[in-house]
Each structure stands twice: as structure tokens, then as C-alpha cells.
Image (cartoon, rainbow, N blue to C red; front, side, top):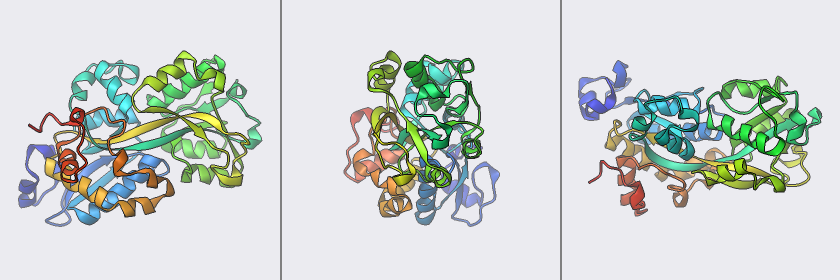
Amino acid sequence: MLIGRKSLAALILLGVVAWGLPAKAADTIDLKFASFPAGMNPGQLGIAFTQVVQKDTPYRLQVTTGKSGPQMMIEGLKDEWDIFFGTPEAAAAMRTRELMFKKVAEAPELAKRNRAILSMSLGVYHWTVFESSGIKRFEDIKGKKVFLGAPASAALALTTNVIRAVTGFEPDKDYTRVRFDWASMVSAFADRQVVMASLPTNAPSPLVQQWAASERIRFLGIPEEKLSHPLIADFLKRPGRTLEVMPVGAYGDRQANTEPVNVLGSWVMLTATPTLPEEAVYKMTKAFWENLDVIHATAAWMKSINKENAFREINIPLHAGAYRYYKEAGLNPPDSLRPPEVK
């Protein structure tokens, strides 16, 4: 039985937790959290979020990784997960059955249940190669194996289009697009099973630093003259997408670039459905923001997470519990984010 169909208080009185899992303590409630691998920025945020929630609330988050973003969203909106990640672009595509949701007939109906808790920068696309590969531009991947994103992910579609715009190359004709999940990609690139790995993450990323520790790395970028290409321009019009620059020295002397390169940025949302009770999301949202110093201490890039950006790029209603917290904290969410459940 889904946790939202009974009050949390009732579950505690019965001495059980969601989905019939035994509680370790009478005041502990298990929730399912679909996250990204720890090496990715959302995965790091997921760990930090879990830590502060479990410190200050009765909720114990059971974290699962390895799902693609669209898979996470579809399953989450079917209440298979209590908390999960989604992107503004995917949220928009789900409403209109576009991009990765073209074949998901129920997508528009599921999209009506999507609720945001907070927003954060997913970072910039690290189109990464090892310097020894000799690859210095996208044209150099011709005839080679590359990783562009997990199957059916927004990242896969995006980087495929970037390569189309810059080179005119088509996947599995001009180069081989290898299909790994995000977790498998980490070792596949390190083991040179692919010559390029596309990873959306904030810099400096611990995962990319791990690669760079073994050999100097280089980041590929979009030439200035290609920024006006329809595929790039279309990307920048989409929710949660921005043009950014990968600076020289972002990874110190382990980075081979001598000039900054144009890359694309993305935003991600921590989300839930109305099935998860308001009180639960209120307490978790409060725990997160009231322990922001702990969050910032987890990784250097997390200092970019702040209340000023809490709503940036969000294009779905807030969860009623998050909305309640933000109102109480004086952040005044815009009317466009007011949840339908709040009258």
C-alpha cells in the first residue's frame, strides 16, 4: 500500500512502515528515494539530503541508484518512489509527450502529479577525453566509441544533437554510441572502453577528478560559430538549459585545455508527488535548508545551492509541504509554483 493512502501517524501506530517493511524504531518511517550515483552531483546532493533528513526527522531514506532520469520520473509519478529527481526539460516534455516520452501514452496524465521540492544546478556538460587519445574537437570522434548519456536520458539526446550541430555526424554511422547506465560509464571511460564520456556535473566534479588523477583530461566545446545552429539555439530555449563556459584550470594542472570552451548547463529538481504527505515533505524541506552549512561542507560545488536559487528554473508546482516551508521561511514562492492542493 502506498504511504500516501494512510496518514503517517496511523502507520506509526500500527508499528509498520511503507510497503510493509519492518520499522527499526517506532518513530522511524522508511521512504524510497531514487537518486543518481554518488559520483554525480545530484547523487552527492542525494547523500547530503539523506543525511540531514535522517538526522532531524523520523524519515529513513532508502536510496536506489542506476535509474535514468526519465525512468526515475515515470516510476516516481506512479508512486514507486517517494522522492526522485527530474529536470525542467523532462517535465515539459512529459506534458506534451515529446523527446524521451514520445512513446509513453500516459505521460501527460502522470505529469499532472509532478511536484517540486527544490532546484539546483546540475552543472555543465563535461565532454571529457583523455589527452593521450589525441582528440581535441568533436570531429575527432569519427569512427570511435563514445558515451553520450544513459539510454533514453535527456543527456543522451542533448549531446547527440550537439555533435550533429558541430560536425553533422550521425550516431552508429559516423561514430558508435555505447549504451551504459551512468554507474557503468564511470569505469568504462576509465578503462578506455570509450574515448569520450559526456557527463553533466558541476566543476570540480570528484568523479572527473578521479579520472584526471590517472591522466590529464581535455574538455571538448562548442565553437562560437556553431552557437547559432538551430539545434543549439533550440536547446537554449528549453526549460532549465543555459549556455556556460568551462574555464581553463577548472581541474588545475590535470586539465589540458589552454583556452575556455563553450559548454551547456542544466538544472535539476528534487521532486515528489502529492501522494507523499505534506507533513513529510515539510519536515524534510525544513531539515535541508536549516542544515545548509552541512550541505555546503559536503562538496565545494554545493556552495552554489542557496535559497536565492531554490525556485530557479522550476516549471512544475511545488509540493504542498515544500510550499508551506518556503512561505513560513518568508521566501514567497511565485504564484506559478503554488500547488493545486493548496487552496
